[in-house]
Length: 277
Image (tube, rainbow, N blue to C red):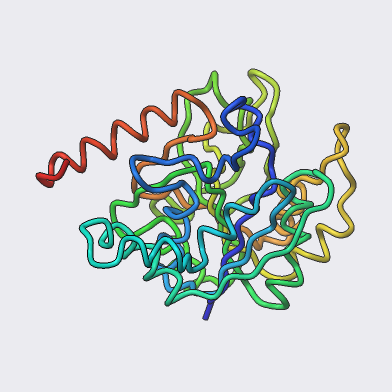
């Protein structure tokens, strides 16, 4: 059974400067809850309790968020503000949190490789907190875990994107083996306009088998000096060992201002529909 989930959170968040100059982008709030908490809640709802973070300089706020704040809790104890901490307290009680650093920025593949000491020789999930996801049939990770349980190979979440946007994503090629499930034959990271093999884009949810670490270790950096997870997954795909699932739900790119605003509006509308303000 999978129990581990890795969060690569070392990036600088340059698309949100100057807000992210001194604050981790993962701590940007959607309503009253930071993005990273949504991601950990999704992991816990899928049964993943061993949470690992690959952090970097300026990310201490993430560690503090998933820790007890005795002074704050003493101040709000017995007040109506105490209920606001129930969600994060529940995560702290149910999950184990561990941390390692990505000393230099080297791409998502390099960040995942840095997490090897935390994940060990076990299959594990990866969540990119920038991608805020709401599943229709359980969380997106829970959907991927069902696929993994049946096939025991790496699984990536995908969604259809407009053809003119494929250059912003990793894009798969493959054959549909059942409804919304594809066996991947190839992946291209940010293909040039008009050259994408499909319009099925990889989003920030993965289930990876542990052999990915050795593949990443042998993967050469690209022209920007970055190790891409898509290059490593292609090596698995050549052996027929990668599936892609078109998940059921909504995804917001909260690394962009437009996506962040859309996510905020969506969550606020959901709040109002429940009669809360």
